[in-house]
Image 1 (spheres, rainbow over the protein chains, first blue to last red):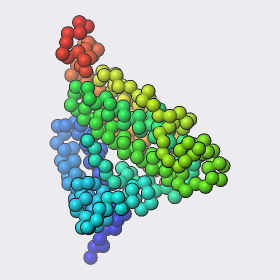
Image 2: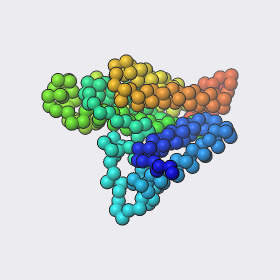
Image 3: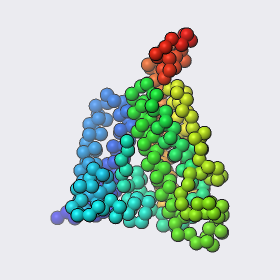
Image 4: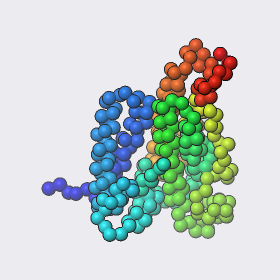
Length: 89
Length: 205
């Protein structure tokens, strides 16, 4: 059976797929008709949104749009460490 | 508007403080070729940019620069975390510490405060895109200069990532300049300023 990825693995994955989205987004700004780049963007954008949702349900939200995915009865946005802090992202 | 994403664009985890190097790297926060100036430059220039691809690139690169500013601040923060008064005095960090304690404040390595005069928003797309391409190269040189002074791989890796992004942004601004020139008079790119002369006869043709 496959082991579930941990916090660090999930975050690394989010960083990787998000980087693809960020980089291809800039390329598409100056090449808006490149179909190959567009489908590459769509694929990684989907993977990123999925990963952000999953991360939020385990460890709290990284974005306001996934804040409702964390199964909790308290506001964790201020509770989890900020990215420059130890244990942050 | 903007939304905050609670992660760094590239992870930063520095385990060894180094206030000497922090004082060098802070230049990419508030120095002449730093990330704050870069972001403000592109986000200021975009409002009057008449070509949608270029407005898009200025918005998206200007936004990415904010994430780079956050990375630089995270590096400086971690390099100066929990310093003792003895470490501050010995490292020469005292001149910064006396005014800002261990907080982040946008200044150049020389101590000169950040100023809007580090960039121009000229209102002419050819002029502004040349400034933007030069800015990316100046930032790349600054990162090269930093990399010659830094040995700690925990610092070098995120700095190398930031250096790479300057090269990608330079490429995208080059494409933007080409897009602008393709829309202008090929016999004289300077015949009109498309950010100003489109609604009136400038009499300059």
